[in-house]
Image (tube, rainbow, N blue to C red; front, side, top):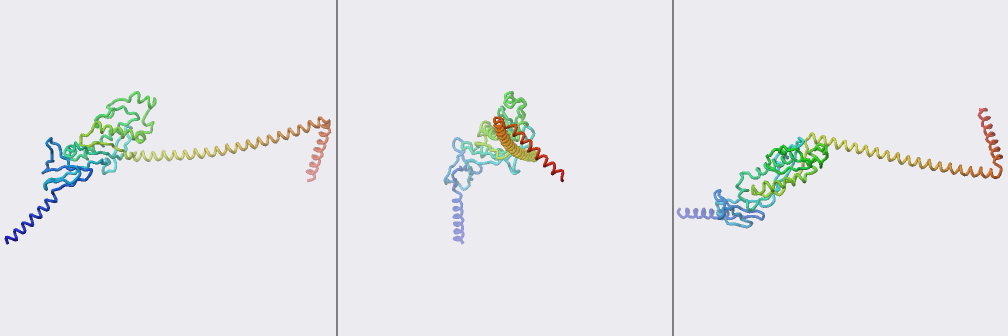
Length: 316
C-alpha cells in the first residue's frame, strides 16, 4: 500500500511539475510587449518603471500573469454600438457622423495606459466624442478661435472678427454658403487637421497613447435635411434638363433661320442677276434704236394674251 501511495504521489508531483513547466514561459509576438504581474503587482525596475518584455520567449513563474500590449497603430471606432454619433452644428443642424481614432501606445508611458484608467479605451472614446462635438459646433468658414478645453463655452461669447467678415463679404452668413453641413463636408480636411492639432498639443501622451489622427469617415444630415437636399438635387436636375432642352431648340431654330437667310440671299442674288441681264438687253435695244418697236411688240403680245384669256373665261 505504501508503494502505491508513493507511486501516486510521484505521478501527481510529475503532473504538477509538467503543468508548472507549461506555465513558466511567456511568448511575445512581434509588435507586442509583455508586462508581468505578481499577485496584481506589476514588475518594475530599480527606477520604479514598468519592465516591458519585447518579442521572444521569456521565463516567468507559474503564478505570474502576463499582460500583452499591442504596440502597433490601432483604430478605435468612435461611432459606438449605435452606428453613429450626433452633433449639433453652429446653425442648429443635428448631424450624424462616423469617425475613427488612430492611436498607438507609448512605450515609455505604459503605466498610464495600463493602470492609469480602469477602462482607457472607453474614456478616450468619450473624450474625443466630446471634442468632435465641440469642434463641429464651433466650426466656421474662417476660424480664428484658439483651442481651449473641450468643455469651454462655444466661442467664449465673442463676435466674429472683422477680418472674417471681410473675407466672406459684407453680408456673409453660413446659411448663405450652403449651411454648416455643406461647409463641414467641403472643409473636412481642415476639421481633421484641427482635431489632430488639439490631440497632440492639449492631450499629448496623458493617457499613455499617442494620437495620430481622427478621421471623419462620413457626415450625414438629418432625415429632414436629407429629403430636402434630395428634392433640391432633383429640382436642379430637372432645371438643367429643361435648360439643355430649350438650348437645343434655340440652336435648331437658329440653324433654320440661318438656312432661310442663305436661301433668301441666293434668291435675291438671282433676281439681281436677272435684272442686270434685262437692263443690259434694254440698253442694247436703246442703243440700236429698236427699244420702242420692242416695247410696242411686247404690248401687243400681252394684250393678245389677255384678250384670249378673257374670251376663254367668258365661254365657261
